[in-house]
Amino acid sequence: MQVKDTAAIVTGGASGLGAATAAALIAKGAHVYALDLASAIDKAPGDERITYVPTDVTDEGQVREAVRQASATLPLRTVVNCAGIGPSARILGRKGVHDLALYAKVVQVNLVGTFTVLALAAEAIAQTEPLEHGQRGVVVNTASIAAFDGQIGQVAYSSSKGGVVGMTLPAARDLAQFGIRVNTVAPGIVDTPMLATVSEEFRAGLAAGVPFPQRLAAPEEYAQLVTMIVEHDYLNGETIRMDGALRMAPR
Image 1: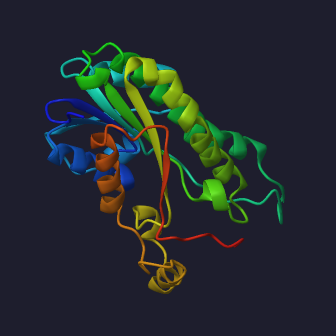
Image 2 (image 1 turned 180 degrees about the vertical axis):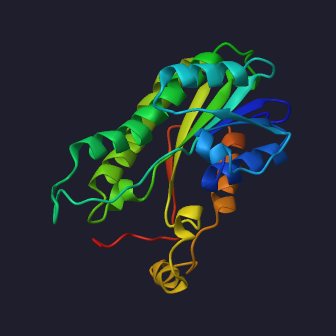
């Protein structure tokens, strides 16, 4: 699919997986609209090829406005959902039962937020002129290997990411008539800012659990996979694990 001279939306685009993806799409000639919380955008490096749009993906009005901006000048062809949160809590822990509001918030951000961006962006993509074979665009969502191998304390996170995996095929089928593909990436352990605060010993322990290559993944490798998915016109309705053959233990 054509990427050059088109618009792309990347949620969570101010850091980590989103920032790496924004850079990769820029290198392909897209103009990127990076949607993120204002606090994250304030810390992001400036780039004239990126339009930062303060957006809470759980707020329908904010997402609609961001999509409107992204589709105002260039045809919107690419959407990558990277925004997410991953707090840890057991169903029954030392402080009692799992915080029910926290569970709902994780699902609201990771699953409902992903769907909100997917649906509202698809509405805009469907209005663009079709390319070869009727294609108009592609949405790439981000799940996690926790969707399949959720660990102790990951019940909320695994539930939300399992939902992202579960909606991939029906979303692709729903949007096929509009020439919009939907795929999902399920990363393993990626060296994002979230891991920057842990010790080297802990990082080495995480890397040692990966069969091969025995290291953490780089955000740029996630971005490389996303751009491949975007450009591979026959890849649709699929969830791809990017984890070095890692299968997570219970803890």
